[in-house]
Amino acid sequence: IHNKAIRAVKSYVDDGRARLLGVTGEIALFLNRRGQRLTRQGFWLILKGYGKKANITTELTPHVLRHSIATHLLHSGKMNLRELQELLGHANISTTQIYTHLTTERMRRVYDSAHPRAE
Image (tube, rainbow, N blue to C red; front, side, top):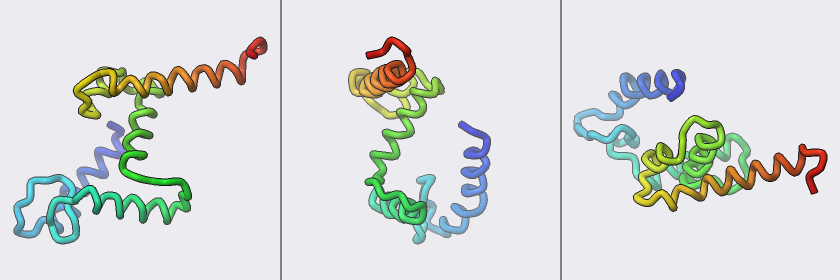
């Protein structure tokens, strides 16, 4: 995890979450304005709002974000397939192998665009 991300989460836990928590005693890390567990719909609305602010016109969903992060982690060499499987919570490695296929396809495109004898 990048140091900037660690600092951001620590700041949220120490300041933002503490203010949201109030007296509810909720154990979840991410809370809504009422100090309750952030729902998937709540996260989607937040993500959609940031996408709009950033002028992102393509579909932006939690699944798209999850898929993009997983693909980046594998492509960049930050994680291997087994580590990615664990992070994503996939019971079967074959579910995670879609990211390998994407890596292979990407390598083929790069090769085809860069190699002088590529067809």
